[in-house]
Image 1 (spheres, rainbow, N blue to C red):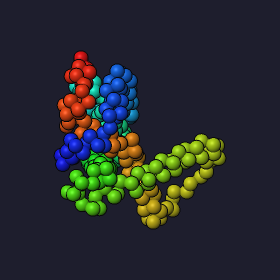
Image 2: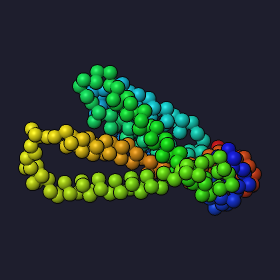
Image 3: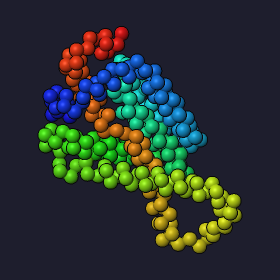
Image 4: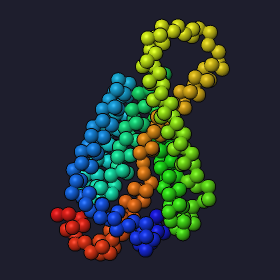
Length: 253
């Protein structure tokens, strides 16, 4: 994004976009409450892992608190333009640490498995979000995307479609279970003669579910909002002068 000039940004960020951002500053409290609510929910969903791990819920709370403090330190205008980025970061952190509760292994005394998963989860999430951003820049600012490889960003549309399909399947599965649990509860599964092949299949399914749930928060990430927010911050004064706003009108009191 450092290669995108102000002249290019003005062409893509219209006067109406600017007006909407500035006017939204008057209702910044609604953005604030949504962020606070998401923060509280993300903290709550990580609490069950306290039964198995102490370090992960504490680290999750620390990360979420740092994200919240960073958001609160912004002025009202930048709270609005960065809203989607912070919302995504909060939910992604909450989801990753929530899923650690399913990775409890008695023989893993040093919690290596959940630790590796947390790193893997953040790396995958970062890569997918970055891929979305690159794909957006290549589409909207082709003259500034020369440094990106041709294949960079191609994964994000396919992954988003897969995640949407995954979410639909999960919802259908929940509905199916809800309306059929009366007979599913009575199904007897014989686990005495399970073959290695069946273990591999079930292991593959569980890993797929883990990856799918880990990356679900990326569906709420908007590369358009992210890029606009970055350009808006980078050229804040230029935009203000371009559309003749005073500093008080622009940044607030």
